[in-house]
Image 1 (cartoon, rainbow, N blue to C red):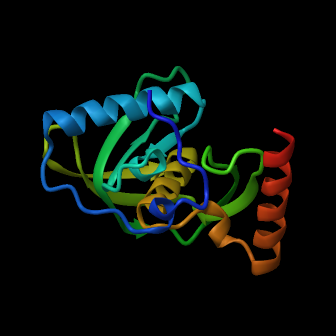
Image 2: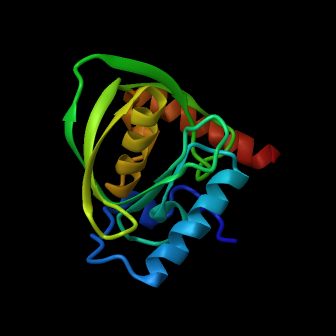
Amino acid sequence: MRTCLPYPHPILQTPAAAVTGITPGIRALWAEMVEVMDAMPGYGLAAVQVGVPLRLAVVDCSEGRGRAILLANPAVLHASVQTRDHEEASPNLPGVSAVISRPRAMTVRYMNADGAVEERDFVHLWATSVQHQIDHLNGIMYFDHLSPLKRQMLLAKAVKARRRG
C-alpha cells in the first residue's frame, strides 16, 4: 500500500497535472487511494499526497463507508457564500489540526470513473473534503488558509510532534 509523503515534500506544494483519460492504471491508483484513505481513516485523499502528481482524488464521507467518489480534474464551478467551520488535518503532517472555514456547499465538475464529465453538488462535510482535496491538487495545504502566525504555530507544533513520535 502506498504511504503519504511527509510535508514539506515538493510534490505537496506543486499543482498537479491534468488527467487526459481514465485508464486501467488510473482505476488501479484510485483503488489504492481508497485503501489508503480508509486505513487512515480519513474522508478524502488526493493523488499528490501519495506521491503521484496527477489531478486525482477520492472522497468518502458516508457513514458506512464504501461509497467513495472518484474524481479526476475536479474544479469548483460554484461555491456558496455561507461557510462552515470544520477541524481539518492531513496525514502528510500528522499530529496537528486546525479549524478551517470553507464554503458550506459547492458544485464541482470532474471526470468520473467512466471518463464522463459530471457535475455534482456537495454539501457540509462532503463539500469540505472535496475542497480540501482540490486544494491539495493545487499545491495548497489546509494550514495555508491560516493567518501567518497561526500557520507558524501549527508547523512548530508538528515538528515537536514528529520529534516525540
